[in-house]
Image 1 (spheres, rainbow, N blue to C red):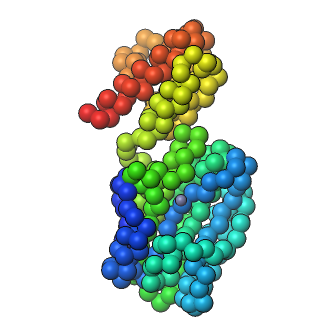
Image 2: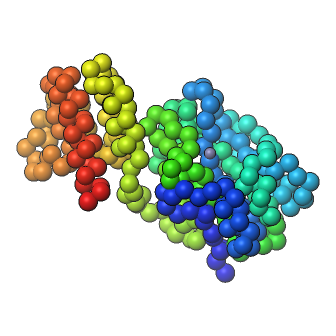
Image 3: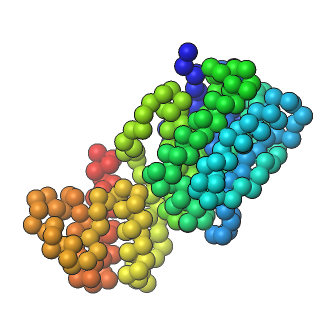
Length: 284
Ligand SMILES: [Zn+2]
């Protein structure tokens, strides 16, 4: 029998904390896992998980099992283990089944975010957490669930925001992938969703007022955008440009002007117009 997997949200919408707990309670979930990214200084890093400060045996042993099952992935990704913690979080307090809140890593630490968001590592983490859920369900004597997966934040609450990424977007992507794995699916090509990064980058550019923007800033934003899939490719040097400039539809495939040939103003305008163009396309 397949595992019954519930989710408190499956799109970028706002769901209140109590609503999440009520949902899990009403649907008689036997395990509740809430996924988050941590935020602090740029140097803070590591994994940690939380339970309600409770003496409930199932919660304690369930979390022990879950925590133990993710340790190999932490070692593999060279992530610090900040340990098993307790906290009076609403989703932990108001759920009436064993509940764990997981902080996968720090979004405010650019290097750690890159580590946990990189394609292969992201898949490794999702596989690991899916396996941890299976193991915990077994240990609770309820191998078929239902387990309730909770992607933190969403909608008007983006959670932590740093370096052009939002916690809400990451944990939704992550939670959906964990569900897919629990349901037995193979890795899929990542679906294209609406990119909150576009809004954020636009805000950043607005803040820069377009007059003190340096070439380096724009290039960093561009690189970020490429990584997030906003561009297919960014051409950064003349040799690359020479190779692609005669290919058909280059403008759709590439943000294609060699950066070294552009004035700072060209660069700013080009970047802005590309973001806008892309956004218009996304919104139909
Ligand atoms: Zn959070």
